[in-house]
Length: 78
Image (cartoon, rainbow, N blue to C red; front, side, top):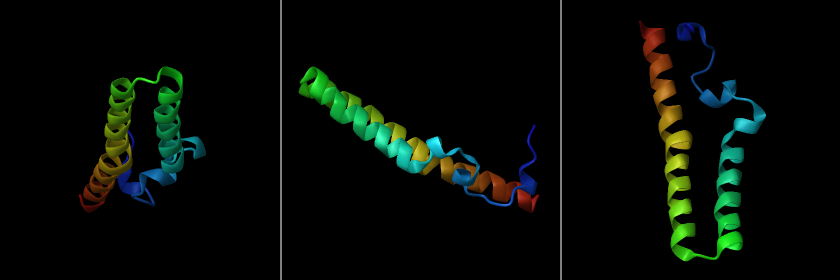
């Protein structure tokens, strides 16, 4: 198991590769949403895909980094 108390930063993005950064997550979601419209031209299906992407963004861009930061800081205080 990784020891998080020795990490220099509590920012998860400092430990992710360049292809897994917020800009790439946003760009991928935008491409998938727009691409789904150009490929299928069905409003409800494109809307469903877009909603799933927004849920993905909320988790990976807001909740996951916040949880990681809180966990690392709690391990440093232990």
